[in-house]
Image (cartoon, rainbow over all chains, first blue to last red; front, top):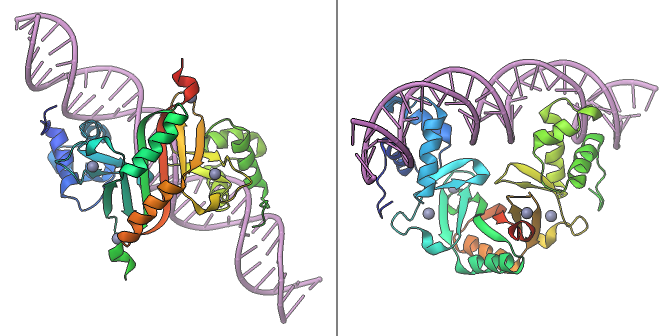
Length: 134
Length: 134
DNA sequence: TTCGATATGTGATGTTATTACATTTGTCAA
DNA sequence: TTGACAAATGTAATAACATCACATATCGAA
Ligand SMILES: [Zn+2]
Ligand SMILES: [Zn+2]
Ligand SMILES: [Zn+2]
Ligand SMILES: [Zn+2]
């Protein structure tokens, strides 16, 4: 629970798999990559992913059932703003950004509707600049 | 493709199942509800759902793998704004709203980053006003 | 050391979605 | 009318994603 999280063996293996990937990975892709490190079952991956999510070191992309290392590893945890993801459907690259105005507008809606938000997902699917110029 | 979409038999059955539900349903829940109407396989549900999504009559909630009838059935298709969903984790109620400022901010980011967006997901998870007062 | 919390190993199962292929139905023009 | 094509449907099998149940191990504090 320190600033730089102490990770267990499995958590490190999973995090490193995500950190060295150039895009989001599914849990089962991670599992396959870690077979040689002794991983045998999905739960080994999912348990590590849960912790890493808790620690804010990775994000889950709901719209593609995949996970990605946080792009702002030393800026945890995004100053409490909501995070938006732009996901390229051609190359898989994910851009991560936060916007105080969007965060504020969402808060306005939840406040005026008595809704207690716990987690907010903002995912933009499309084609990135690199892939769009082809 | 008319204002009030002409639906096939399966599409009507699936849409009516969603319309009479008081919250989102999974594809397999729909399948179970339609067994007596002759539904036997998931694909019958998924094919109908795909069309209804095309027509803008229903929405898919990515964060819970479920589908919900559009709350604005006569306001298609939301004036091209992005739609946000507030999903109560206690009672399952879904509130649907759109916000031009959020839409604008997202467009600003995509425009300035050369990202061509095709679909944007905004889902707020939490506890609704009714459930929060308990 | 002993207890409890956390982490791990493993098989089975549950849930969500798609592929592949055959058949039927609707539309329209020759 | 009929042939041809597109759209819709039926069905089984499989793939992809996620959790449950239970046993074992590891670590830190009382
Ligand atoms: Zn991040
Ligand atoms: Zn791209
Ligand atoms: Zn709607
Ligand atoms: Zn509620």
